[in-house]
Length: 92
Length: 264
Image (cartoon, rainbow over all chains, first blue to last red):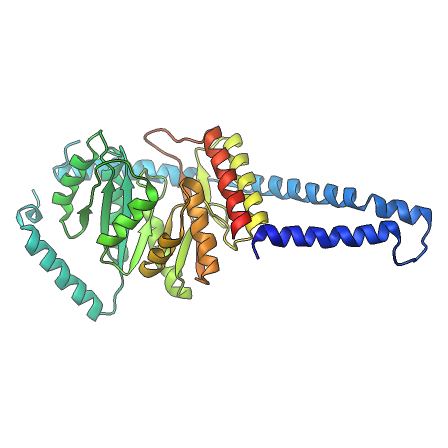
């Protein structure tokens, strides 16, 4: 099964469960208040997932290292390399 | 000038074979570094110098295979000088007539590689050879088939990226992690160590280009149950030359990602 198929089947199952609840196919006979909550469940889910993703992105962005020292080290080594290579006869 | 320059080719390759036999007898590994180049005249000597230094310090056996795609800037002329300085057993020049792309450059390089491990990296100095000993250590530690450099974990990171570039990179990575769940933190990086036969097998399976190619390699590797280790690396964006990330790259990345999502 491809990843797309896995996603689609999971979504389909979730949607069916949700429709069952909305239509009250199991005849649980719950209150109007509870029914409203079920109706807006997908919206809650989307908002939660969205916030989680945004939060994760922000956290990872804040913890994305800036490698200043690595760049400094490289610049030093480039100069060392250029000197050594020209002493070995490299003509650029 | 180094004495290597006047040793004829045949003697050089004989010597290389003798050395290989020696290494094999000692149970030592050999690492072939593939350097695909296109207009890297300034960077090539520097990256080769850093590679030689790193391998000398760590005592690992290596060869550097330069695959130049007919650069008009004289990269090959510089490569020939390097071959003379370091010897034709260390620097192997395997140029191609014209620009044919990264994937085929790897295939071309593998054909000429005598090592049992292949290291792929960019020749533009964004990947520092000082990490190679860590790749090797990691590979031995877990007997991994592949070791990936990662900018997104531990002490890994980048230099020379503005906020926009970082957001795109992190965003694309997060999106990819959700869709593909590859179990590897840096899918688009191209600083990696492969067991030679593993890379060969993956090259047969992978069809995409650019960033997506690196991603597909990992996805296919997972399908084939190869084991993957990770080493944090610092990525110093191009010192010389232009680094590019345009709208076109992003669109083709998304297309490639969705293709992998729908087909694997």
